[in-house]
Picture 1 (cartoon, helix red, strand yellow):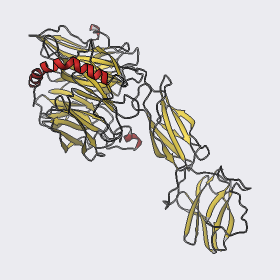
Picture 2: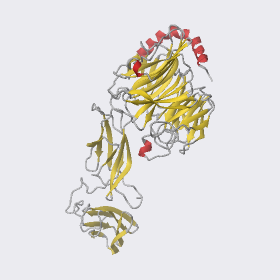
Picture 3: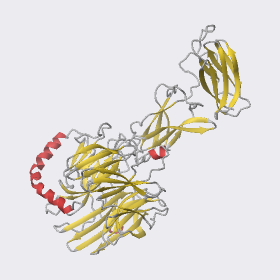
Picture 4: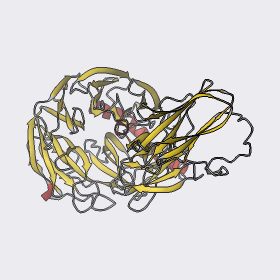
Length: 640
């Protein structure tokens, strides 16, 4: 396993030559990308607790973001600081309010929930976990004494200590491992040989008796769903075997422990990456509803492994340049995850091409670090993309050890690079079709809708294209995740047709935010709807297509009924090509025979048979015509 010291020495040896080329590289690249669209601007240093910054300072930060304050809907940042100044140390647990669109507020001593000096009980982990009893995310902190502490997020502050558990390790991630809807905590033991999963409880606490699994000193570890669909596909497709797996890096490989969906793990896959002690990020890159794996190491570059529908992984995009950290998010709001790569000197955004390996070799947009962000980073930390503003724009938050003038590379800081457009348009809605709603034996299209994590959301607008209107028109709007179109009836037959009918009913949706900005359109979904009449045909006395061929034998078989819907009688009309035996029967939706209308030999020609449903209940019925080896089925609706 590579140590920080080994890595730093390697970088020191190459630093001098890089410095001489630095200004010319900046000039060249800035000219090269000056015309590209920008997504990031206005870099700021987050004013985290910092008692000193000298040549002997050693500082490590642990942080996460969530909404804490009650005065706005913006995301705040929580930070745990372990700061050494020679033989003295400072331990500080606090949060910093996001009061404006530029930076987080400065240290407020009254917000501290941990503060110690010259103490061995350091902070070595800080993550927010959802408390189902309050609907907010509490701070989970692991300490040098082996304890994990939960601090309640309430009343616009991080305050009361909710729970202390001895875990003997460091918190690594939060996810849904167990068979419930509560968030669980993954802890790696201090010895590095055991992963412990502490199951979440309904009161926001964690079960004190963890599930344990033996591992071999993983470098990086997280919880993620890889063997099944992720949300919202799990909801739309009613998938239940979707609990999180354990994913970790060990030497030059990624290893995955599969969730059995019965609160246990089993060995599943090992992916050889060739990157020693790499970091991992999880994201759906190809928009198929399955998470993919992004593996990166500073001097080893980035490799993306694409998920094969939960059965395995295939190599995808490869970048060989320096990669300090990687994050994924939809910067251009097209519904596909883009990536941002932190390098020594810049944050590079690669927009998703939606084809091939999904990313070009050249970035789509580059933000060069500028004061107060240091012009050069020395050692990487954590990175994250988030809508800090509750307005749709995506900011980049990252921590790293800067290349300082005093040659002390042991001081970690956090920076925030803001969105160029904080009030961005929303991402397109997820729209899932092939769903139906049944009411009083009538079948209607049921649309399943989700936004793509946008916190700034007002409603969906639904557009429809059907057999009566030969263009899309705004049909309705909803803020719900389901919409049932009761104005349309769907065709359901008793048996699978040899040639399924073509779709004649289409929908798409757009997302609207609170500033009334509108997303691009969602995917289009389609249905086969029942058409009560032909709006483009000339209309005869019975609303059938008019014809003057009253005495000539028909050229093909046909079958229809009018009126439809009916109460209580309707006429079933059919045509015979040749003289032959004819059967015409009526069935209910369960396939029970209701009536035999015709069972005899008939000459070629046109026929009309009355059907009376006075003794039947309202609902859908089917009439089945058979003659000369031809079988046709029609649908009719009785409404009383």
